[in-house]
Image 1: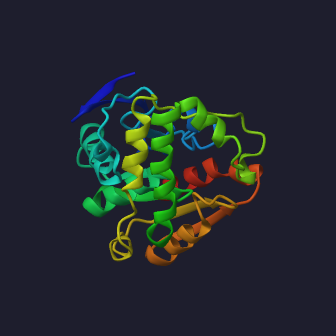
Image 2 (image 1 turned 90 degrees about the horizontal axis):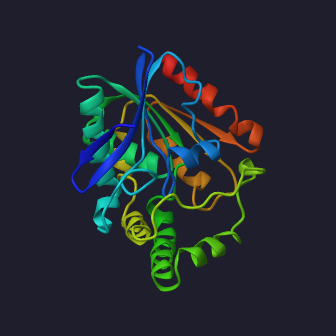
Length: 258
């Protein structure tokens, strides 16, 4: 796999060139291309007839990073994304897709360069604005726990947290971030939020919002707020694993119509 250097990290990248529309796929916090595939969040699988760029965010998966929390704030990740797009798709408008942290990264990138995106597929939008403070406290506590007790204790505690019903039957996964960098990754996420509502309302790219139920870290309140704010958006809510299995087709249809 090729790597792409950004300040403080080398990003691991994969690129599938089928001579079609340009698409970039991101992943969620503590995840990676590989882990998202296990979770059923690799919507690019089977996305034929596109030029599909996937990458692991800094410190995630096969990418490197450093123990600097500000490196993992969403505006910094958005700058990484825009650098990648300038390298792989110079001067082109790109369809962006990604869950959770990937959604935050895409919205910040679209706020920085609104003409860069032909469309957005925002998956399981995370807590934002009024709901962000509580989860930020949880991320800081997680960072402290990992430093005090080790990553195994953190993983064991996480097993007590119920999974959304859409993930029923999915194999257990663990964070795909090294234990030396995981506290910094959490602290960077804790100091992140979506762009302001006024800024989001100015993003004109056609947007599909894909949400699921019963997940406090990805509440439907954020999905509904984004649907209300974004001027050209649709909202689809998954309630079962079979609903989740339809998401790749929804992405395919959106990219094809873009």
